[in-house]
Length: 484
Length: 67
Image (cartoon, rainbow over all chains, first blue to last red; front, side):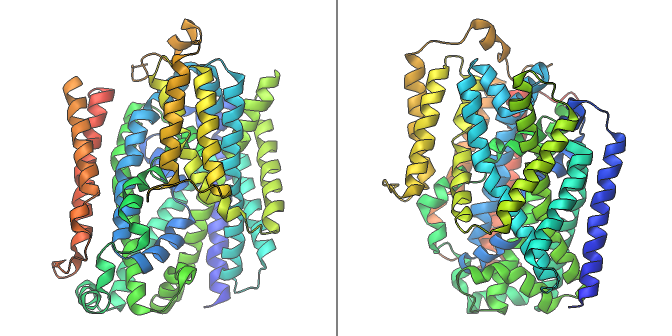
């Protein structure tokens, strides 16, 4: 592939991002609410694309086709279909109350909201620490993914370290300039880019392989096992509890939490939620098919080698310019999550730490935070720490264990600070022990399932035996679905 | 609203059972229109039904749309 063409497409992409960052900076006003929350002003389109772009990571374009290459058509049901229901349902039952109460009392971060719910600095600090623990490894993996993608795009002309630094630099420019508005607007562009590319790749590759019917017949005769769910990844216990890891944890991602609070009104949220399933279907069906077609067209890839199946098929069957757009689309998926994570951690540091010390949460502090966090994470990413991938697997389950805290805070008036603290320590502690090697029996389910049951049980028991926060505090969280 | 919530919860339980279609774990050798695997068609119909349940849930918990 022509390096010049690739680098030109890539340069245009980066230029568009910076221009969007500058435009959003000009539109913004100099207040914390505007910088961190975009003045809670997003309509349906920007809200949907920013949630979708942040939710979809490079895993969707790289890891998912790699899995369906081995596991087959069932991958869509396991990852896509269930996410198309559970994630929007969590937005309805938890996201709306978070938006509603956040707007009512001016909350910006999970620690701020739930620390206040139980009048507990301990809960605020614990949530802050856990969210940081689960989010920072993702951020570092995102930077590493950016460096690897650019190294691949340039065929090694741009080394990994320079690529990672470049991705960090561009992300910092548009995130620090535009804040929430800048990242959301760029997400609209990025999500459009990877969705359009995926649909073009889907139809383009199928045409080159002889059309849908011909591929279907080959699948029946050559790889019929890909039409079932025999792969160990799709075993019944894992299948039944799979919604806990991924679809349910999304609502606890701090970058999703913050974005939900930017909705202009309930109509914007309503429309966003109703088109969310369609967005996920448009993403996951092509991705699943592409992986399965790859098993027919380029057989013999072992283990993680299949993660390259999308770029391999694109390079083999599609025109050079589309390959260039495809690699840029992968980078777009990386950066659309990265910007949200960097901004969110900067918001948490500014609101939960800096403002708590009696200072004013100014946009300038957030901007400095964006630069500092990106710089620190880039430094770690340059060393390519191997263990970070293990932490990220554990982190997804960790987010799920924050959901009971949200549910108790929003809907259970009898929950107490002691109950939440004890349950959280026990649940997250068990999960950490499991991933540190203390393998308790899971009965064929995801380990987080057992941890979740224990956590909920402990929150319930301890809350019944300890004292409630003041009635005024509980009052603030009454009627979470009430109109404002 | 209470009745809508009950219907939503019942529909969610049914959706969960249909998602875990243990009775159909073997490869289905049928292609709908010659090219669409049965499992994909099944899941797409499931998502359409799920979108209906999401709409119900919004009515049940948020109230009717003001639009």
